Length: 613
Ligand code: AGP
Figure 1 (cartoon, rainbow, N blue to C red):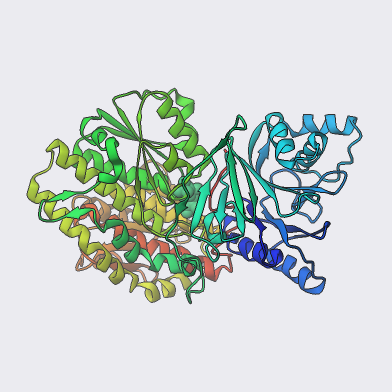
Figure 2: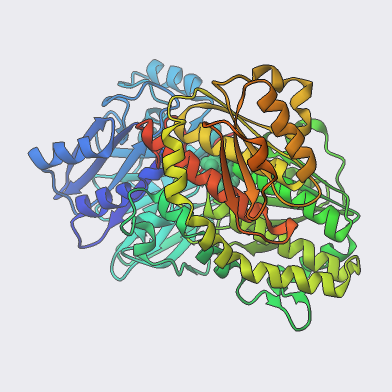
């Protein structure tokens, strides 16, 4: 999704804006642009492709400004090109806008504007906003924007400036996120926190329907009715270095290796080994839902939906609560049977995923108790929840989610264990043993990360495979799905995750020596069946990469092929093993994608936070 940065204050607006856009590159984009104003003169520069092209252009032919807005565009309407790149302007060239989202009625609006002799230059939906504001403008950009918004159907995060209103920016939000960064005699706008971390830790998150006006010494917020409102700034304790690569080649590799710390940070203060309990007071009154809910529905998308599947397994196994999961994008189409006795959990790294937000709102509207598991304090999801359990994974920049995923599983474990405690469905000693096991997970993750070189070497033999199959059973079925998603989204190879038991019902037809099968074979109740699945694959000449609990020797006798591989994972409690079995799969995806020459942190067509439905 697009990136937006705006600046008013004494600094060089070009360097603040370009630096901010660079820290938003992970959001995925295909063109970029900037508009700044100095002494009543607007200077705009736009380029197709990556931000470095814009930087090159500015190096050759610099522009200067004391305030301005910038944008990285993820094309929705109109191909990626210089002319379609934002910022866009009105006929006078004095009103400038950048936009994240989709204006669904833009063709009708465009037709009206053309009838009224506006000169429209681009194929974008965004440009019509500049011309609509132009029509409303009577000396106040804030008022003209406020009068324009009711005409727009769709979703938007906007930032606008008027050449005649120096050191003033207007922002508006309906859907995609927009934050105000608060500085000292300077203020900022951005579509996400990392853009502004070098300058401020204090943020105001706009709600849907809200407008903001910033000058160097003021940041005013207005509700959808135009009434000024106030909101306590959120202090985000992330430090700027966390959004840098810290010596790693890619953010994704850094974040895979940050998982032990993310696990520690997500656990800290929440485990009471003495009492054999979990401290989830931050859920507030919503915690009662863990005791009383008759059923749970978990909504999420992508990798977070895989965490939801693990959560389902844990809630049913540990707390004996009937639980179902659904994709955020599907939930509302099935007239979901949820109500006041339902606990609705939404899992999201960003807290801004439009499909997850829509499902969450649907469940809430039907009376369910809304609880969020989220990695971004102050995000839309956390503000709409009755209670939030934050994952403390820190900023996750790589588009492929890794440390947020394992932190989400830990959060779901904490919820399931506390619910079990409240409902008395788990022997106290069993609960204590699981909590003790959980405290060992960060160091076991560290140990598992030691497989990096082994996985890198293995990836060399997989670089040419075009199709992969990932299979697992029980709590490892979602982990097989996650391994497949990681591989496909960054290497572009076709990879499918499947319940291992389903092999004989179809996928086994795919098996031959050209389709590597990653088989998750943890010690425990599914092991024997997984060995049978591995033998089925071998019997058809297939190639197997088996992830096993260290110490197992069974598979060594089954896997005799030179192309086969056995990856040993440190032993842990069975219910905690997904936290370890996912790590080699993340590393495998990373190294295969690297060998394929892919843009690991910003894979094609993908965005870090999908803020459109
Ligand atoms: C995961 O690697 C993907 N980037 C994607 O599936 C992601 O998990 C999904 O878009 C949900 O994002 P969220 O967790 O921010 O809601």
